[in-house]
Image 1 (cartoon, each protein chain N blue to C red):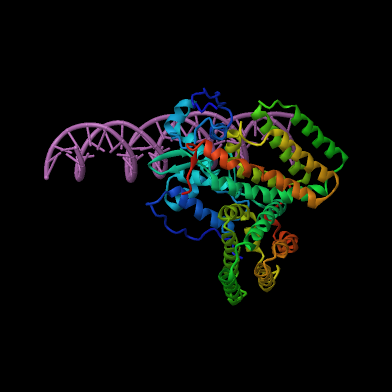
Image 2 (cartoon, each protein chain N blue to C red):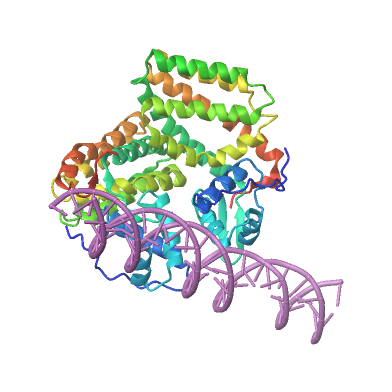
Length: 233
Length: 233
DNA sequence: TATTGCGAACTTGTATGGAAGTATGGCAGG
DNA sequence: CCTGCCATACTTCCATACAAGTTCGCAATA
């Protein structure tokens, strides 16, 4: 995994608000570990990199701080937050709680068409080569988002999206040692099976199992990348 | 219910960051309906009111927009978001999902001391006069926060706090017509009963019933204050 | 009277300069 | 060699000025 922060950023469009664009770009760069946890993120430097003034950069930093991805320490600097095992587990807990109720709500809404769509997504997931890690993560995210859409819980998914930002960085680290994608896809399949069977109980159980998978690999990943993780404060 | 926005704001302390202070103050004023939903919130005007520059006001607005309490429309203005029934129900759904799992986790952690503390809180709630609506809301919030603390899920409570901002405005409106506080306190008691009995199942059921209470009064409240609510977009 | 175009008065977005505070490295003193 | 002080170079924070867009009223015209 390359952790260089030297990739030239795409030019920003001066048409729409610069601050919003910066927030999106910086967010993905942090989540994809293009910026290393613990690294300093100076307003002036980022402003120079993107050829804008400091003000929109500052406003993007505020949003990033709200998302828990950076920490602004007044008069000291802005730092990419290190990954905390406790924070990952807290986020995972909240995500499991929300998505458990989401699939329960989804059970009442499924029909043949939605099931077919989910099956198609699973087939597409199996077609992704093992090496395309980012591709699988995107497909996995799309699957979970689809579940929320079926349940008619778009807002719940937005909350999950915010919460799981911490988890995502860990998943980008879990290239080699973690659970194979085949296992995760099998778990997806069991969720869809339960939905097709209209069983709220087994659907909930299936997604809880699925979302607890990260707990198995988290300690090893943290041990493998001690520099990116923070000891409990 | 007075909806005047003319109350003189407390002076801000120039020692700690102004933007953060403004965010807190404006947030509570919005939630307590001191600013009316739909009302314009001009950067310049707020800056003049608090005797600060536009910049920290602007940064507070960004955070408020992130919390879903205002909507910044570029070059048009910043508006206090009207209450949307759909948004309230969405927030309620997420809150129920999170707190359901929180109390399940709390069951494993309770002991005689924590139960006694919760009973004391309930007794204090009963001592609050029916007229002191804000006081009861604060006590209710403290009770739920305590449940999260018992479960060791401080982060989950933070998410709930963010999510329930929309619900809170409705609760401040539910002065007269809504469920009596006595009923709500009884529901608190049933939650504690379940915790004391170490029953995850009944504890979860009890808090789900409790958090669905708002659904009974929401339509009436929306109908009683049509100006503060927004039709579905 | 109805309509259309224009201008003035707003709004938020961006840029820039200075103020206050913090970390750091060199230097003097023990 | 070690310790404490101090200047300096950072950082974020706040204030102000300017730029770009939207809204709304009013007047001119058909």
